[in-house]
Image (cartoon, helix red, strand yellow):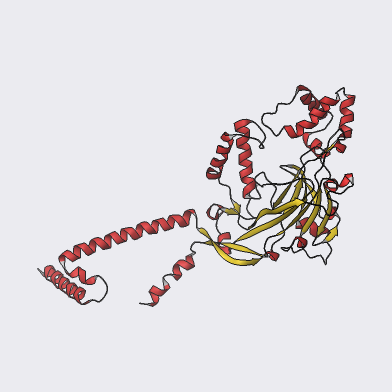
Amino acid sequence: MCCRGVTGILRAKFTAFCKQCTLHGFCYLSVGVHRTVWGFVIVASLCLCATLGAMIWNKFVEDPTFTVVESAHYPTENIPFAAVAVCDAHIYGPATSNVSNILTLRGFNTTQIQNFYSSFTRIKSKKYSPEAHVLQIHSVLEDLGFTYYDLTHQFRKPCEELIKECSWREMPLNCTMMFREVFTYYGHCCQFDMEYFKKFAENETNLTAGVDKSEALDIIVDSKRVLPNGAVQNGYVELFVFDQNHRLTFLDGPINLTPATYFDVTVELWVIEASSDVRRLSLRSRKCFLDSDEVNIDSYQSCISRWVMKEIVAKCRCLPFDYGDKVQGAIRSILTERECYQKCDYVQYETEVEYTRPQRRRGVESRNTENRGLSRVAVHYANNICIKYRREVLYTWDQMLGQCRPLKSSR
């Protein structure tokens, strides 16, 4: 009886409190029907909040970072100019005389030797099947110590023959001070990058690129193809613009430089950097890698290229230049299934050739036979500002606790 009396008194007090309380919803707890409906609403709301909280927590665990625009007017003068590579995949005729003499002494005729040289470009096609004498020539040269890499290096077109003139911000310079030879997926290329250029540039040299054609890189390229028999043909070379901190991959699209043409290449770019909170996360959480991480790649493109080449070899047993729909489908699956991370801090360069026209200046289309076939290329920024993004953590613990401070102070 005593307990029932106490319970009745508490129920009456609680009912009176609910009727007079101004807090939203408490008045409904004093009436039977309303009490049931309101209790159901409260329970449903708690379940919904718990579900949403679990979703937010899973999102934080799986991908705790997001990207925001830090600045839409970030000056490009704060960003190193892009690397520019000029690649000629053809055999340079004057460099083949030594090997030609060796093969002639070994009893191979002119046609067989010519087929051997042609194999270096025809091998890119999956339908190409080398002749027996071509395989024999490779075997003979390997026995003499000529590896495939040695041959491609010996048959390359030297940078001083490929790039005839160079200037930076209208200042003529020796091309050897600006371009260095690198071995890439496309073969031996001549590459310009600021890291190399700084070693030879004078102290007063302005290394900042601008938006005008006269405010950056300007080169004259010889795209003529010199065959091993001495004949000269019109050819083409490929130009790439990419981040100097990355290696050239086959995901980088080339600009084909045709003879006697002027190319005005504009470069758009954007920048992304990671905050200190993102850097403190693990590699799997931040989904981007730092220079301090132990990874065997230098970019997202390198990772994708590695997996694609493995897939191509498994599917068609061919070089990754010419392949069918099955391999292209495999590439799409690689993009979705493989975990290839981008660098946490990187610059994305995107190029556009605004216009091309026959070039009649600086020796191009000159009456002098040795100057025919030259092309002029100007590479510069499209704008003097760009967008800068920043990777941030979705919520840090101090930010979560900070959300509770207004509730605590209002009590």
